[in-house]
Amino acid sequence: MIKVLKIIFILLAFSENYIYAKPSQFSEGFEIGISEKGLNLNLINDISDKSQLTFGLHNFQGSILDLKYLLIEPVPIFYDSKGFQISFKRFITGSVKESGVFGKVGIGLSSIKASSNIDLGSQIYDQGSFTVTCRTCGSLILETNNNSYKFIPSFSLGWQQKINQKFSFSISAGIQYFDMPNIISKTSRGEENLPPYVMSKINSIIDNSNQELDKYGEIIPTISISTNYIF
Image 1 (cartoon, helix red, strand yellow):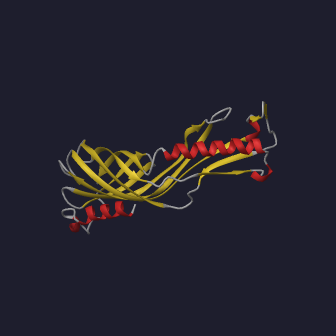
Image 2 (spheres, rainbow, N blue to C red):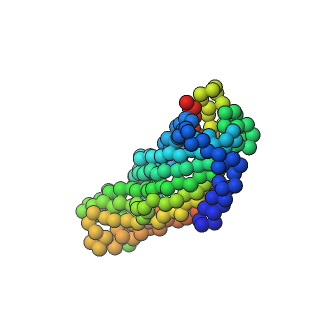
Image 3 (spheres, one colour):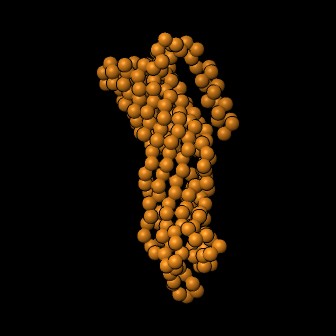
């Protein structure tokens, strides 16, 4: 991750006209969009005809997928994402006031967590050649073990389509570095009080969930769609 951060800061430091930011105007406009991190609201600062800074917030809370492995009925996965990001955009063709292709490097400080609540009393369990239930087992919460904000650097390429003097539309896609967390569990009864066959199923669900997360690795896709308004 340190190498990725160094590359981003080098690109920022040596970008043409970066030092000529206009101090008299804090923001030329704002950007509203959506990405894999949720809703984005950013301020825009043009630092040259070809270069632009954006900085703002992102936030999302809601269910995105279902957890199905070994469960009688799927349960929703609750996703919570919030944080801050600053990005440097350099136009390869066109300019900040025209349509064109751009490259974008960014760094975000984000908290991205996921959790699921499973009713253990509604599940069935293997006990030798029999299947049994545990009506008094309570509930199980599966959650990612990341309770702090992390730096997430990114790089993407995109297209800006100018609509008129005030509005433009942008879409970009690329990659970002994110250290995937592990899945941990906690139960309403305490795991030491659960029968072995219940714990066996819980461990299998956790192992499978972590294996699924490991498939993504640390370099994952990023995509953003936004509308820009210039004052």
